[in-house]
Image (cartoon, rainbow, N blue to C red; front, side, top):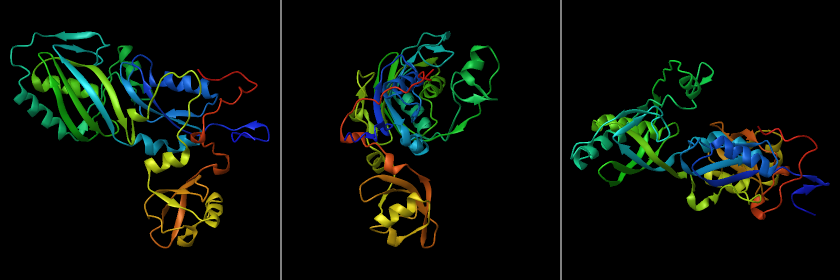
Length: 326
């Protein structure tokens, strides 16, 4: 029997797919393509990439969408090229030019540049670009901005784990950076221009990693056939601490009951962790209550999880209704 079919009914795909998004399509475009490819509505991503940007985009399918808040919260690593002498309304190369200036010799002096980068390393809050997906009064900021409406975005808490100068020419600077969720590299380009006294914009951006997933894990996009997914258990291992359940613990966790140390093969952490069954299924996310018991925080349909990492299969046949993907 096909492991992805039960009683003649195709099972939904569950797991993570790391793609190397090309420049051009939006992150939503990639999600829509994945929905058609795998014939499921349950597809999300772990952090938007602007249309002009390329690189790692983590797709979550089926039950893996329940891991969204943990995957999206992880740091991102980028390689960015910032061009000086031209500023745009969107703070990237696709926007309308709003300022042009001729750089004077030595304006991108390495000593001054390193001082500007050090200021960015210490950043604790950042003002996002007006052309962003942030909602203001229920409307995306970029839509309101394109309609000519006045938009005010408040600074958001961010952090910079690392920021290294890769190269510097007469007009361009390339940096490699690791930053927190919510950090906009376009804002870095704009702010760096202000610190260096010259208009600037983000010329190129490539995401090298999203949390534990890097370009080494990514496939070219779009593929011609449904590719192998990283299974739920392996995704959980790369995202959270794990604990191994006994069979009794698995049954109790599936029912949402409290567990004790005896329901695990070894003592689990008090902090949030992923609970795996003896058969290596992701059963639940759970945590200790500070005493002697452990509570389920989020359950998974473990008996129906499709571990596509065991081998690539064709997408399930289309349902008997129109594909609702926009």
